[in-house]
Image (tube, rainbow, N blue to C red; front, side):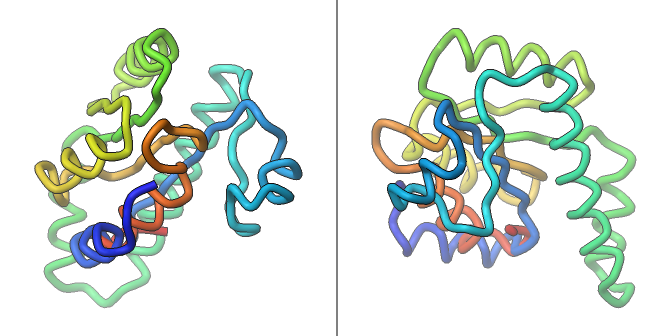
Length: 162
């Protein structure tokens, strides 16, 4: 997982950033092993395209609702501008075939996709793309940092994090 300092940086940029985690392990196992916080419900592999797309849409809706509940300001103007463009998804998966398949799927669904095979690269991309990233989909088990730690770092660095 990414360090706490990186997480703080991303949250400051985008506090409402939504993160969806994926794992081959059941949620109960991840909780028992301390791999995910209780408030995060990963999407268990294998999953259907429909299940994945439903979760992505729900996360984007939640993010939109959170932004809209804030007083109209520069945030609202930024969201109105963003609504006229495609949403950008940061996909973090260490298995190349899965990464490629999911990336193709998300692009077919109209999302702009940025990919990383490690948490370290995901953090670099988050810094590079900043506010352009609307949602993150990450594997729970990454080689250099657990997905929940990556999520925490991304949220910390991004004001739109969840």
